[in-house]
Length: 273
Ligand code: KIV
Image (cartoon, rainbow, N blue to C red; front, side, top):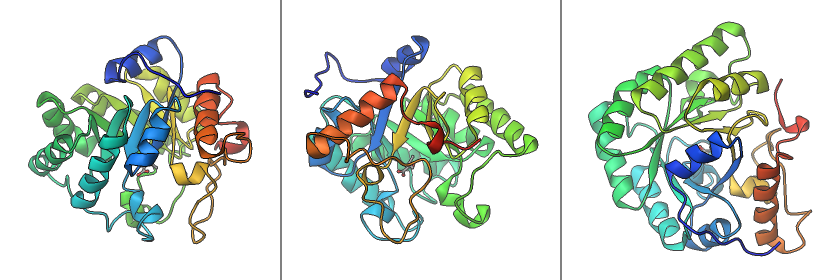
């Protein structure tokens, strides 16, 4: 497959229109200029400068040690390489503990080139979400498994498996949409819960380990190249696209984007029921 060209940069409107057409979009993490350029010219619509950089680049055992300056540095690299994808940046652990802190931290990421910021949590983020979006900063709310809360969750586990937990996630996702969130990211939740939320919300929903019904899919780029750090168990929702590529790493990114858009990824073996 040849390199993809875009007629216009991807914006939040592009993602919303994709949802309305009932089509899918693809997202991947990126942390440097070279990969940002390859990924954004391979048909991937959204680049996430994720705090997963703590694990895949820094060798940490969680995302908690990642600082705002770390994300700003990688954000600036990704901005240089990007060729029209929408860039989302993570607010790291404890950089949005209050709404005023979230505004200051998000502004720094936007100045570094982010088009949207991502915050992990539920209804407690409603005030920050409203403040940021009213000040012109699009927000992606990250719910389900939220790795920054790993010590409270007690492990990397599927969330929303029982009806009470599922209803709570649905309710809190609605609160964040009402507060002005532009996108919701759902991590490690059962297929049926992700489907219900995607159908209920007007905003685009991106999934990772959330089944095939979300509007978009995201993966950590190292995972989809078979480069999960050896100390980490490869999650069930990961697929290595490198073996099926006829053109190396670029071909793997293109295969991923195509599989997401054609609805062949994630397959049942990547999902939680
Ligand atoms: O930091 C990250 O890479 C993420 C993805 C797992 C969605 O938040």
